[in-house]
Picture 1: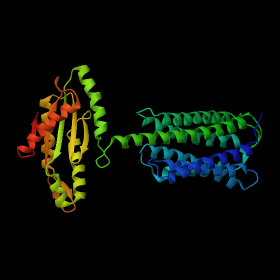
Picture 2: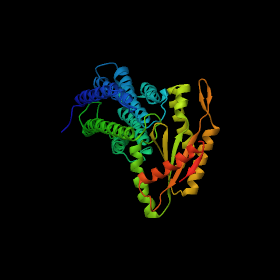
Picture 3: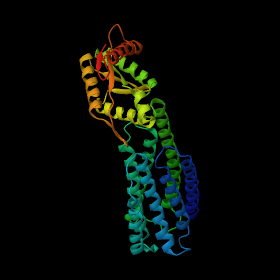
Picture 4: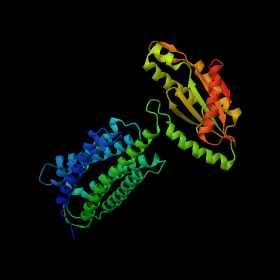
Amino acid sequence: MHLDVRTVFFMLAIAALSASASLFLAQRMKLSVHGIKHWAWGLAIAGSSGFLLAARGTINPALSVVLGNCMLLLGYSFLWTGMRQFVGVPVRAWFLLVAPMLAAVVLSLYFLDDRNGPGRIAFLSSLITILSVLGAWELLRTNKDRRLGRRWVASILLLHAAFNIWRAAYNALGQNIDGPYALGSLSTATGVEAFLFMVFLTLGLILMTTDALQTELNRQASRDPLTDVLNRRAFHELFERELSRSQRVESPLSVLLMDIDHFKRLNDTYGHHAGDLALKHFVTITSLCLRAQDILARFGGEEFVVLLPDANIDAAQIVAERIRGQLANHPMATPDGDVSFTVSIGVAVVTEQATDLKDILSRADAALYQAKMKGRNRTVAA
């Protein structure tokens, strides 16, 4: 059974434009996912090229051959740059134009008519292969968490690239069909593969977007919206995990309870905006003093807590003093000039008598109270 190639082009165009419309609607919802707009434009442009490609032989070759295929490659370029945006990699405007401009020159000079149809197909298939592999590579090299959506889309792109490699080799060896729209196994295979690629790519983009939204929702549920550090609930969960690990490997576990000194006075003097800046400044300074495995969280107001795995009481005091000293020596920059503030810190370590978070925080809070009573801007160990 063979498919009418013109009909296939029309079907692909309609399917691509329908998928594009769905992505444009998703973009209007202001989802916190980058790349959707480029995917939508890519499918829209590639889909529109189908109408020009289907009209080959009835309109000027400059439109059907050159413009149609350049639009198709521009669509692939938008899909590739959308993958870059999705993973947070910068995109340059010229990325979109390299493949279409190269195709415009080569098609105009060598493949404007159908005398070398196999060469044209091999050339275009090679460019599509490169753009598909680039899109898959962007997703795979940044997929440290092995997200299903990214693996799905990357697999579809690589399978599409593999088919186009075969298609390019098939035509380069001269095993072409007669005429641009003749019925044959290659035309049938191309039509079926292109339609399946469109369907499964669209499903993959939806899955990838859903995956990213779920990750963002999880992040928002576990993060303080102002400082972007962990909130109290997330800290409780991580404490239980680290406590189990420390007991299993018999390693120390310490906690720092920190309170910014005279925070209300800072708010009253400089305004609440300055208070928000102070909280962010404190988080920045503190983060620079911590190891990758240390856990910083905001407990509310001006109170923060740090969990220090594999740190005994002496090591925890050293970290606390480092935070206190760095904050005291690095004032916060504001439009009205530098503003200095300090922090008081209570240090506690997990012991056989105090193994749950409530007991540890109670001991750290008692030490913090002592730090405040002794004049603030100091560290006290429980």
